[in-house]
Image (cartoon, rainbow, N blue to C red; front, side, top):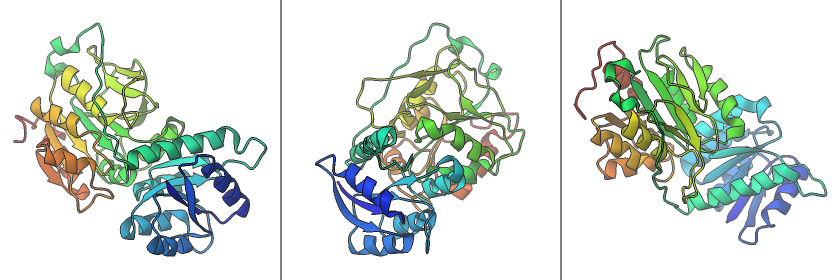
Length: 350
């Protein structure tokens, strides 16, 4: 891949340059020392991937990401000295279209150490995603069977899948929820497990609803927003509990939206709502179709509000969608269907 480096610290630029060329498939396309310069570079020569710093003079990485994704879109990996210290900027940048985040590796004899290895791994994964690797559907196993329980005895469920640009879209949706929503929400956002707690904290700051990480073995409770927390596939088992598992299948994203959607289509006894938001690729489209076929109400984000119209577009193309809505309309649709104690979802797409 041709990779652009955006960082105002020359030592950081040097370590990133050294790491990139360790893989002979990569080359440094150009270097920019602030966000404004990066925008100009992209206009002249759009790379396959940008390693984007956050805190820089002239223009920070959040604003640069927003403008680049609007004018000359390409894959962006946030590389920052402190993820925890810049959480708000990190998830704002991801909301504008950055794919992931990693700490800036240090310049040492080990060429970045663990942080350097993680950066190279993420660069490689992004390369696969950009190349259009297709996600497959996983299966789940369990012993007990919640499917024999009456639908009225389990929480109604809202399942949301998102990727590129997802954080801002999710914030716009959950910020409109009242504190006492009569349903449970599970969010599958493509984010590394190291940053899942920070993402949950950030989502919590955007909503009145309690937010929790989806813990292995925990049961789903009404009135809580759950965030997938591991680099493993999240499913709901036949006994109604969260379960994580690692798959040997060639699935580009982990956790996979498709895997989760398919598990609830298979195992959850009541109908609910499935929503697929902005994102690159096709993850979630087949799972959304499985939900629709089980009489769930399914929503795809409209192209007009998507940062990347990939996942929702595939869902629309395979007839997996009941409604195509801009992100500002989605919360209202959800609340009109499930915001009251009486379930209003009814038959599929009615």
